[in-house]
Structure formats: structure tokens, C-alpha cells
Length: 78
View 1 (cartoon, helix red, strand yellow):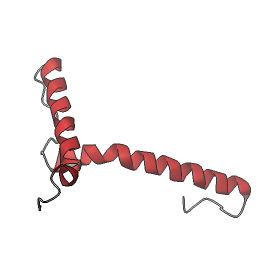
View 2 (cartoon, one colour; view 1 turned 135 degrees about the vertical axis):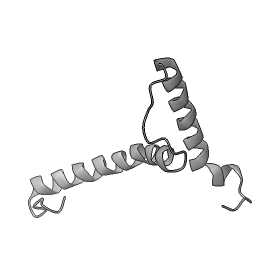
View 3 (spheres, rainbow, N blue to C red; view 1 turned 30 degrees about the vertical axis):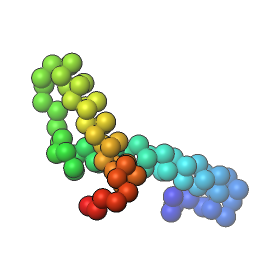
View 4 (cartoon, rainbow, N blue to C red; view 1 turned 45 degrees about the horizontal axis):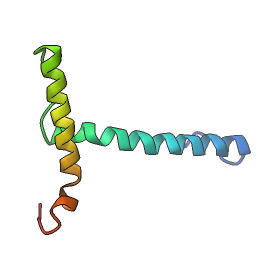
């Protein structure tokens, strides 16, 4: 975004588009970071398609709980 010329209307529009794309990308990439850092899932080992799918679905469910832990337990610290 720094390289865009924001003084022109076209440059301003492209900057706005890139800002929207970055916001969406940040929301999508956050669960992947939680799965990698908090749960240590760095690479997939072949265990069969069904087992891999079930493991990833479980990890994404856990990442949703991890992101909402403060809302689920308002008095908890950590």
C-alpha cells in the first residue's frame, strides 16, 4: 500500500480495496496462527484423509474456543 499514489482518485480507490483485503486476510489467518502456535500443529502427517480432516476440524473448534475464552469465562485470568 505504501507504493500506491494516494493523491489520485484511482490510487485512493486501490488503497481502499487493499485495506479491505488486508482486514479480511487478518481475520482468516488468525485461527491458523492459533492452531500452529498454541496447539503445535506445524505440519500434517499422513494418517488417512478422514483422520486428518477430523483432526483439523477439532483444532479449528478448539481455536474458536481459545479466541472466545475471555467471553466464556469472564472472571478467569490467563
